[in-house]
Length: 176
Image: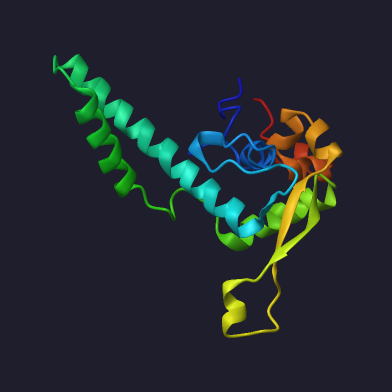
């Protein structure tokens, strides 16, 4: 019996691959900003939206548990009080807890590029670092390819194993 959740893995309400796909499709997953799928988004923006969406989902889960316990104890909870509890929990969520490091995100995104699921668009913009270091690279926008759109949710759930299928089974625990 597999114990890991199908949609996010342990400690994650949803996976990075799922989020990137939905975000670049323009669906604004988990309350994130909605983008135009034809224009795409820069990697830093996708990473930011991912960690904020994880923070919102984590805070919502924590608030729901608190509210559930309050209701079980007989408390009458108003919508305003529920929103206050959610906002309090949102402030408490550590952003280090809810996301991978930026370098790891770039490595993950590199796998998506090698799978040809994302591609650079013609759109670029100046990056903040260029204010002090003019030869720094510009921000490049990425969008989903037809191949990325057609890849199913199972493939998106672990792009590294999709790219290197021979390593997948060696990382899975064998049933007793």
